[in-house]
Length: 112
Image 1 (cartoon, rainbow, N blue to C red):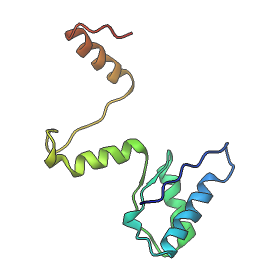
Image 2 (cartoon, rainbow, N blue to C red; image 1 turned 90 degrees about the horizontal axis):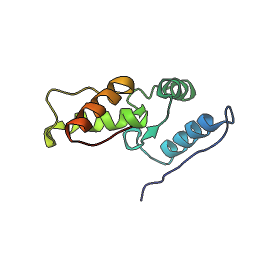
Image 3 (cartoon, rainbow, N blue to C red; image 1 turned 90 degrees about the vertical axis):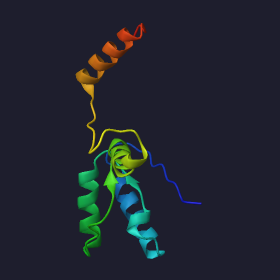
Image 4 (cartoon, rainbow, N blue to C red; image 1 turned 120 degrees about the vertical axis):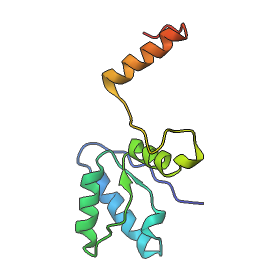
C-alpha cells in the first residue's frame, strides 16, 4: 500500500521543506523517483528546491499540479480513450463558462 501524505499549514510554515525532506527519505529507503508522485500548486519552485537540495540531479522527476498530472495521464493514455489525437487543450475562466453556457443551452439546462 503506497504512503499518502496531505500536508496542511499556513503561509511559510515549512510545508514544502517537509515534503522535500520526506521525498529524500523515500529515496534513501530505496524508492525510485519515477514511483513518487509529487503534486504541488507551485511545481517549478518545488522542482528547483529538490534540485538544490539533492545536488545530484534528479532531472526525471514528475512534479506538477493536480491539473497538470491529469493532463499528463490523459495525454499518455490517449490511445485508450476517445480524445482527439494528437492532443487536446484545456480551457478555463471565461472560455470555460461560455462553452458550458452554450452546451447547457443546447440541452435546455439552466446554468447560472
